Length: 371
Image (tube, rainbow, N blue to C red; front, top):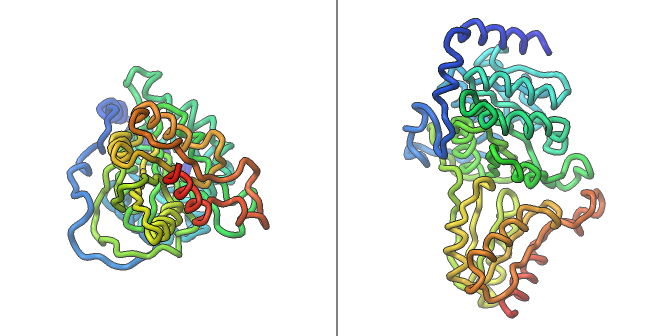
């Protein structure tokens, strides 16, 4: 453990030794955000500025640290801004006791984060690439997710948020391109959140940090610099576990999350040229996911297509397909379609063949509508 991390933990222990258990005990499992932060406005209403996604994440981290002295940010290279610059300026403003580098040990990062959160703090840990989250899998799945349950709600690590960039980037190859969200969706006790844009990233990240449950927050690295939109400069949160219908339609429902939403939007526009009306839904939170919004849409359109970058077998699209088939069986007019990554290791030169592209989605839309 680096000296800065050890010093930060000793400082937390010294200032909270007498009260941390009581604080943790009050933070019961909830579907909403805990503490005074829950009273902040959702969506923002003040001035806005056009920024890209990594800048929106940076703004959220600045606000989280500024509004809560219990918040800490740490991970590999975060002290100088990180590989994607998401933590730029944080250490200079808030000091190296609250923003610090860790050893190259994902299991250690997660274990330290769980302990820090269990003491009543907001532990915001960064795993540099989602591909390297697997050494921390045991800590996240067997410790963080079960912490509250195994103690009968006496203790919890609900202040834990793990940020990590996921997905294709055009040249990442086997170890810098994977989408492992489905692994964590199988684990009761965790929330899994994936934003599609800068505005969503800021609001959802602040909501995740302030939620009284551990959250794994996947950031689409393809969009860090590519996605730009107006983002409120103020402090705001967007609700977790609420899907958003971002395009109304009547012929087929399309569902996705993260970077794949941009692909689905293009497919919807091309399908409209052929007279097919697509309803597009951003799931945002994968666990717990908004079944009601999806169900209402599918009962209207009678058809469903799910798309994600992760391999098709065992991907979260399979869970959506199964659940909606159970709920909407008599209203479905065609089998649920899935357009996903291939069941291969993520390739390098063959990435264009692996990806669930616009043309693949468009072909699936046409075949499903014409079933």
